[in-house]
Image (cartoon, rainbow, N blue to C red):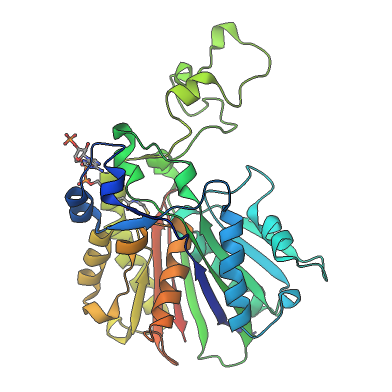
Amino acid sequence: MYNSKIAGIGYYVPENIVTNNHLSEYMDTTDEWVQERTGIKERRYADKHKESTTSMAVEASKIAIERAGIQKEDIDFIVFATLSPDYYFPGCGVLLQRELGIQKTEIGALDIRNQCSGFIYGLSVADQFIKTGMYKNILLVGAEKHSMGLDFTTEGRGVAVIFGDGAGAVVLQPTEDKNKGVLTTKLHSDGSKAEELALISPGAHGGYFHEDKSAFGFDESNEKFGDIFITDKMVENKWHTPYMNGQAVFKKAVQKFPEVILEALDEVGLKSTDINLLVPHQANLRISQFVQRMAGLEDHQVYNNIQKYGNTTAASIPIALCEAWEEGKVKENDLIVLAAFGSGFTWGSALIRW
Ligand code: COA
C-alpha cells in the first residue's frame, strides 16, 4: 500500500473582477452588507462565451502537471469535481481529457457531484486508487462557472453575491513514505436536507419529492406525453437557479466543520495544536472564523481567500491551497488540514503531511 502525495498544484481564476458595488447595479445589495455577512469583497466571473468550467480546469491542470514534473500523457486517471458542468452529460472529466489533448492512453475519467465538498470527496477517491497501486498520476480538479447560473435580481441576492468562478487542480502520485501525503480522509452526508441548498430543475424528478407539482408546470390531471424535462413554469419560477436556506446551511456548517476536523485528527492520533495550516472550503468568512475559534487556531494557521474570489464551491480548496503554497505558507512536513461542508448536505476532511 502506498500513500498519495500532492506532486503538483495549480489554479486559474478568470481575469474579470466583479465587485460588490458592481452587483448592486443589478440587485438591491450593498458592499457593506456583503462584506459584513460573508467577508467577500469581489469575485471573478468567466468570459461567458470564451471560458467554460472545463477550459478553466485546463489552465489549472497545465500548471499542476508542469509542477509535478510530468507530461499530460503520464496522467492515468482524471477526477473532476463540479456542480456547474459544461453539459448535463457527459461530464467535465472527459471534456478535460479531450481539451488537454491526452491521446496516448484511453484513461479513465470520473465526475464527482458533491458540490462544496467535491474536492475532498475526489481526493478521497483518488487516494484509494493510488493506495492500491492502481494509478500513478491522478489529475484531480475542482472547477466552477457559477456566473452563468445565478439569479442576479434582488430575489436571488442571498445566493448570487456569494459565488464566483475558478478552477484548482492537483496531481496525485504514490509515495512509499508512510508519514507523507494524505494521512486520512473523512466523508459524510445527510440527505434529509437535500433541498436546503439545491438547483433542482431541470432534472428527472418530475415533481416526485414535491406536493405541488404545478409549481414545475406539471398538470397531472391533464398529462401530455413528453415535454417535461424543461417547462416554461420552471423558468418562470427560477427553478434553474440555486435555492439556499442560508441560515440552515450556516448552522449545520459551523457544527460539522469542527466535528469532521477533530474526527480526522483523532484517527491519526493528532491534536488541533499539531495543525500547521487549515484550508477550509471558502463558504463564508464568518464560518471560517467560527471554525478557527472552535479549533483554537491562530490567524496564521487558517488560510482564507474568499475576500477575493467568493465561494468557488469545488474549486475553493485547491485554489486556496495553491495560493497558500505559492505564498510559502505550506512547507515540507507541515500538517495541512482540508475541510468542507455544503449542499447535500455533504461534508468531509483530509489530513495531509506535506
Ligand atoms: N444584500 C442585502 N440584503 C440581503 C442580501 C444581500 N445580498 N441577501 C439577503 N439579504 C437580506 C434578506 O432578504 C433578509 O432581509 P429581511 O430581513 O428584510 O427579510 C436579510 O438580509 C437577512 O437575510 P438572512 O438570509 O437571514 O441573512 P443571513 O445573516 O443569514 O446571511 C447568508 C445570509 C447567505 C450570507 C448566510 O446565511 C450564510 O452565509 N449562510 C451560509 C451560506 C453558505 O455558506 N453557503 C455555501 C454553502 S457551502
